[in-house]
Figure 1 (cartoon, rainbow, N blue to C red):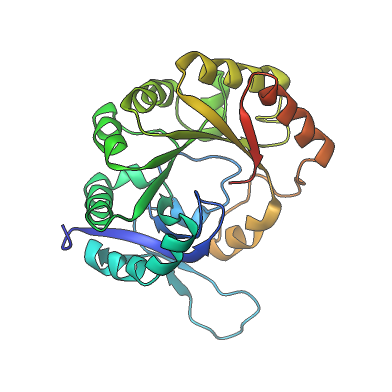
Figure 2 (cartoon, rainbow, N blue to C red):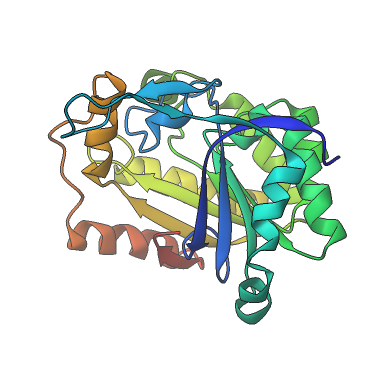
Length: 263
């Protein structure tokens, strides 16, 4: 397991918004979605890529992404075990889309479980049903994104249908692994009352979900798009106002969900 290889683009220490407690978040490279509001565009391409430094003349481009072994990643995760034990934290695997590297992800989950380190997988839900069914029982918590209920709108704004995602939601909730639903609040795209009520009704119908995380859009990724030489589809869009977020929170609380702003 320790020799299984994968590609990551960041390891974030002392993360507080990627699951319970203090966590080490490992960002795996590669994503099948092309969400217009993506805040980690450096995680889309599956292989390492160059990123131009900003404000620095005559400086070499940075390489984003590294080929690593599961053992190398575990060496970093182990360094903070004392913080996990004190806070109820652990390791979170995000991206990109971690399920795009199922063998690597599975190796990491198995290694963490062997050392009693709590694991969380942060996923868009877009993977084969076989991959989702194999990964779900191996992790302690799944953060599952839901964006748009209308299939046409979902395909337009993310590049993929939501059919596979909704089927995988049923697989995850039936697995017995705890699930938190994450909903990005994107002005003019995901924040309509019709869409949000549709999401609330869907997750209530599948059962086994009590917690919802609302993730308000923020424009902080603009510099990343510039450094990658990519157009930012959300350039000029501002974060939703506090009263808008409060109204959305009320929609889910009215249906009995525990709601948190942010991860």
